[in-house]
Image (cartoon, rainbow, N blue to C red; front, side, top):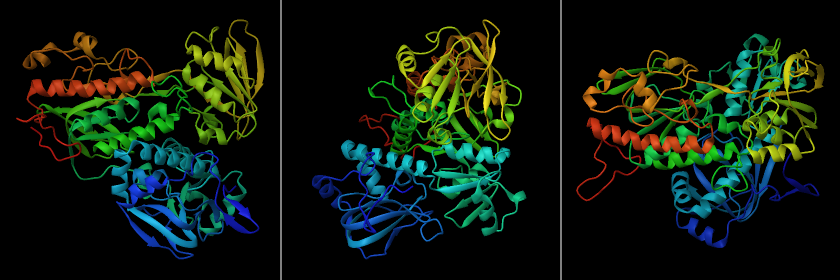
Length: 584
């Protein structure tokens, strides 16, 4: 469905119902004019195309511009129409991604074109303009996702590679549409149109014409413009493993302190926080903020200071060498880092129920984002879990599903859930809380139809109708690759500080004349922050705080090992974020 409006066959400007299409003030236009050039436009002129990188930030001074998906293709549709005072583009412009839409001049007029790099600098310098543009771009990205715009993933719901591609797209907040080979009427026509045999699926169709046959996540990332890893050797002063709140905070503070900072993540920026529909207890956001918006702001902030983010890039090894560390990736490439911040977070535990595996990705999910919610429509769903993540998911899904069954193993919702969430959950008319309840079975062939649940206090069993199941039952750390490298606790979380000192080989620290710092592991210069750390408070705010603290401790470590760049010269000069700096 298009968001544009029509008036007697003529397209007119799209109303700004969602805050995604604001109009710049005369003062803002005047400020931008000093950094760009004015150009006349002609009817039918293409200002930018789907699949190509954004070159300029464009503001309409006169005339109208129509934004289209699948321009020139069999399914061309209007996304929006803009008039004077509005600007074009969406989130990909700020993050260096390719465009997911095409902009075509409908009524000739005039535009203001500002080079992208100059516009990014203006956004960073002017908080009012920056916030206006960022909010608009975030709104437009979510509108595109809701419209099913962007590339298509064509594959079977039973294919693990299809599930992999869908998860990658959803976790990176990329506009796309999944076409299910098993039941979507569009699938057969697409197979014939692109001469694709079922054995070649899953495929990704870009711009309605380019076909990627079962691409890796890295291949898809490169085509879309995500900052995928490069093959040449990389050196950095700080390597951050994981791009959730802790990792992104470390990226921002490391880069802003002038340290060459590289941040990698195996799947997407944001971690578990990126899948949260709304975070209401994060300091400074009294009305709450979605995990996606918080993450996008942090990513842009990291880019602003010169941090380098690489997604997807999965770390497989960590080896000490000459007071530094060799970080090895699953593709065999390596990076040398002076210090390492481990912020790889956790993954939600799978529900141990017979037959549930075949439904994962089709109607059993471990995140509740706009993508998953759009698949539920107006049917009943179930959420398993009694913590904040489960509560936030239930509240978000209640606005999409006809009913949300919150299944809690314990007998008290207050035991693990914040009081403000408990109040909202208990008051919501579309949420029914089931205490002392555990899932024992699932029914449904291609999709979930119902759950068999048991009251663990009485043993009574009953059936709960649900077309989707969202699981938030605790998490385990992403530390399998660290076993035998540094000390972990009995659950696999990384030991730091005093706990690390108790488990460490004392001779390892003799040359430094000290023990592990607060967030330091049993390896000098390797720190852990956020959910992956043993004993950490599993909250977004505390994870971000630990990421910032980790960088302060990196400085302290480097000062004591002589491995610190000169952060202050004779006149107190500090290196500019992102500038080239020496190793020693």
